[in-house]
Image (tube, rainbow, N blue to C red):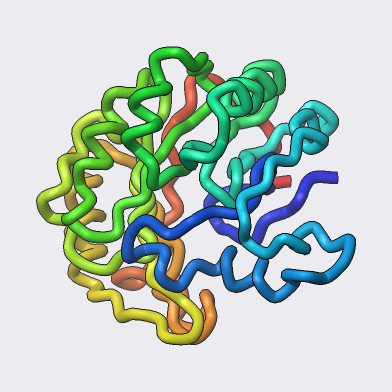
Length: 245
């Protein structure tokens, strides 16, 4: 069985790495950190070590056992390009993604400089999508690193969106995901920040997905923008049959 996901833009999660460290304001209220630290010190629990980074080589080949094609978010509880993940382990993760070509893998990172550095040495089959998180314009350079990666689908996750991204260049980007922050201490999102991204996506032929407005809970304020939901996906080079079943 795959780890089914409640994240609207994916079907399942795969965590060959868990744990991470905070690198920018989007990490301040990290759901994964909060979840993992609840179990620190619980003997035998997968998060006995809390949110300390841990490699799970025994999980590497899990997607090869999942027969039904699905979209898989890679390392929802970590960042594959964290400095403490060895290069050869990153390569091993990519080897599995290449072999499990009946799935689409969605790799998302805030460590875009390492992504750009390792990118030329990694395989980029059409079923491996790559994205960077950009929460404010201060981090728009992550999109520049993203454009250096020869992936078939490149995307930006603007979640939690903490400011306007009007100066973020969308050229070479195939997909934009927006979302507000949720949980205790959630920071507000201005609908005009989202509208600007949606309008530019429409003008430039970029798929646009609005995940949530956030609030006390992820679903507290719904998902509609201007009277409808926005659930666009980029078009992979090969149709993924049954991805949401």
